[in-house]
Length: 437
Image (cartoon, rainbow, N blue to C red):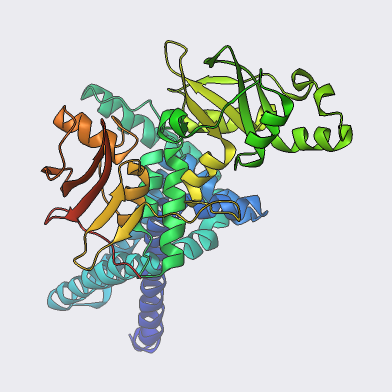
C-alpha cells in the first residue's frame, strides 16, 4: 500500500502528460484536415512550379481528397478513441465516481477546445503554411493506412450507391472560369488605382473567349481604304495623311478588297524609285487580305494572330460583306484599356459633368463604359452605346428623348441623320459609378 502511494504521483503525471499529448496530437490531425482542404490550389501550383516538393505533396493530397480525408479521420478517431479508454482505466483504479465524472467532463471540454476549435481557428489563419508543414507526414500516412481506408471508403461508397447517389465523378482540381472570376472579385482594391487596374485586366483576359470580333473591330465607316487603280502619286498623298500602318486596297468597288498595303513598305519603295514613281508595282508590295467572320471570338483571333504572325485582319459578316478590320492592338486594348500613341488624337468621346453625369459619343464602346464606371450594360446585342439604345427602343430616337436602360438614365443630345451622335448618361439608384480621380 505504501508502495502504491509512493508511485501514485508518477502515475498521475504520466497519465495527464499522455492525455495532454494525445489532445495536442488530435488537434494537429484535426487542423491538418482543414489545412489540406482549404489550401490555395493556385498558390500551391505556383510553389510546385518553383520546385517546392511539399507543395507537390499537398496537391497530390488534394487530388485524392477522399483518401486523404479518410486517412486523417482514421488517425483522429484512433486518438480520440484511446483517450476515453485510458481515462476510464485510470478512473476505475484511482478515482471515486464523482471524481471520475468531473474528470471526464473536463476532458470532453478540453478535447472540444484544443482538439477541434483551437486548431481549426489557428489553421484558418495560416492555412497554406500549415498544409506545407503537414504534407510530408500525411503523404506517408496515406500509404501506411491505405488498407484500412480502402475498406472504409468501400463501405461509405456502397452506402451512397444504395441511396442512389453517384460518387464516381471526381471534381476537377482546376479552377473554373467562374471560380477565377470570383477570386478576382474577392481581391480587395481599397481604392488603390493600380490594384483596380489589375483586377480589370484579369477580368478582361477571361472575357476574351466570350467577346466577338465585331465588338472590338474598327467599323468600316472609320476604316481607310484606297483605290488601287489610282496613280501612284494620288496613292502616296492618301497614305501620307493616313494614321493607319496597314491600308486595304480595293478595285472596281470598295467591297472588292484585293490586298493590304503597309504604308512603311510603300514609302520605302517610293524612296528607292525616286523620280520614277510610275514604275512602282503596287501588286508586288501588297499582301493578300485575311478575312475573318464577325462572330469569331477575340481569344481565337489572338491565337491566330500569333500563329500567322500577322497584326491585321478584315472582318466580314455572314454574307461576306465588309464590316471593318481587327488589329492586334484592338485586342490588347480590350485587356489593358485604351492605348494612345504619338500619332493618335487625344480621346474626347467621354466628358464628366459636375453633376456626376457623363456625356459620350454614340460610337463609345459599351465595354469601355462598363470598365470605366463599373456598370453592367449588356454587351451581347450591341457594341456601342448608340447600337444598344436603338436595340432596346427599337427605333432611332429624337433629340431630347430620355430612357432608363440598364439601370442608367440616357438622354439623346445630338442626332446625325440616322445615327445617334451624343448622349448624356446619368447614374440612377441602381447604378454605382466608381469615384473619379
